[in-house]
Length: 326
Image (cartoon, rainbow, N blue to C red; front, side):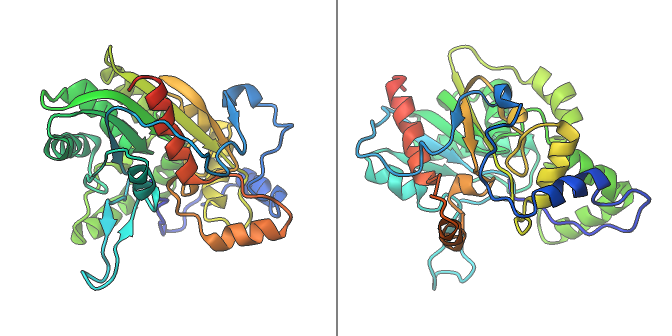
């Protein structure tokens, strides 16, 4: 799920509430390092600080095909210059790393901003077409975890056999940032924004489904887990610096939900099924290896070591699935 950017007309309620500004200023010079004195330690489950900083020498290979499912506003490969330049991969370097370990990997493509129902149907069709009836394990980044849950629970396609679903920073209980944006922008401006998106060929069904009310009072009750399928999940937490693109959204979620988050999804919302742990000092974009190398360069100049390598993380998920017999 990539952070949307909106322009709203002036309203009585400020776009950035005073409480959030206070939080923001207090951490103006903080990095993504986690504070160990945080009293919400019990909410984090297994704390993962630097376990995925470097690649291990050996990873086990799962028996079955891995499906990588992208999040909101995502894509499988984006070609801005047609065939003349290499495409931009959503799973930057991750697909190749998994393949080099002898793992069969399929990247599923779904509508970037369609409703959960539409994305779930496309996910089922994509798996059926590309996997050829094979048993699969799905690894879903952010909102695609909701698509996969809907597909498994509600569509139950006969030509797709899912063994497990691993969700990464998926808003299973919605996002306070979605609540805030809808409340701040207002119904009239939302309709205007939707018309602009539709003009450029983008669907708009996904956004209202990310609110906490929708997820907790409608989606979850109607989308139960299915017996015989393993459900795993991971969350992430960081304290962004002033110049981070997640500074505002992080502060809003922290204020409204009262919990740690990765800039778009809280740890408490990320929990589903067997919770495997919280990645510390990791942002929403770090999770798909989109971190700018320049960021890590300056990070290391401060005397800090790089604490997360997305490729090591996904190889470890594959290793975990292999050890689970999947």
